Image 1 (cartoon, rainbow, N blue to C red):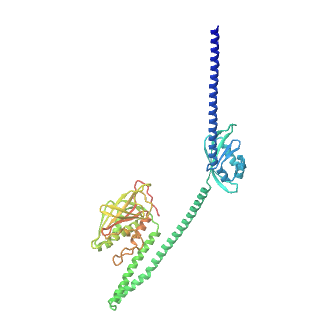
Image 2: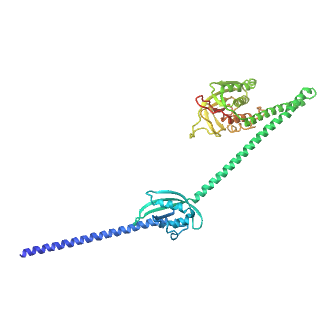
Image 3: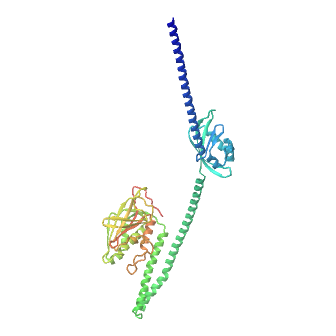
Length: 464
């Protein structure tokens, strides 16, 4: 019996001990859970505080607003830029009333739609009125932030003040419009001035011919009728008058040709280059014969799009120029053509109009100058006129296509300084390009290029 009682006492002690241990363990776990909960609460508070401070101190205007129109928070940037404190706009209705005035109904509908969003949206630009009456332009963006504890949806709206950018854009547009008007006005003025100058040049040149011919006639009559009376010096003076009159006559003719070329309407047609070259050679045949020049044409010569009279004059001027500037030997002229393709749009490794470049072609190493016209179709034909003359220094190659530009005195080489200007003007009027490759003492290669006639395509033929 004593043994049974002892066993019962041991069992009771064990059960009490185990129950106490279980209670202590449960209490420890409960304390640990409470500590974890407190830690989580503090962490959440810290996160919320950081989020709140991030919103408050953000450089962009930010507003948190609930579905029923309550404004939960606006940040410092919103207040600084709009001038409204949170106490002045506790609801969306208050904000709309102050910021949008007569447009409030439209803006109200836009804001109500924000609470149906499930993704970020760009609302666009709105003009707002600030507390001091100033108008600003804000670019708004909004995104959903889920539900509040009471079930209301929460939306965050941010804005970027683009007023300065819009003002700058407006100023740029105004400046561009003003610049365009000034350019148009200046262009009109320049066109009028050019037309007036061309008309004046034509009129002066035309009116000069009558008294010039009278002067020439009188000087020639003086030499013919009074040669026996005049001494040697008097005859020389009279002959100089005749020679000067002839030079002036050539100059006037060149001026009239240049002026007509500037004013005339050119009808572009399909031309056989071979025929145009033949006509040009015939025009300079007298000069070629007197100088002993040999002109060689190397086929093939391709059909092109050009104005026949102008093209023949251009080629003839190049041939006359090549014959003229040769010293101490008979002129040797080579004429040939080649088909080339201009680079397609976007390519940059090609010669650019108006740029002075270095180039090597066979034994030729020289500067190459491209002149005129910024638009040429592809493919094109380049016609070369090569001579064995005195050559042109690189620094002078840009000048020779200008009116009245002469590199040598008239006592050395005759001419008016207009021939190559006519070449450039004529090629420019036909939509082409002209250039020169040359070195002093090694001759020159002048070239012109025009659009090739493509029998398989509908070429444009018309006036410019």
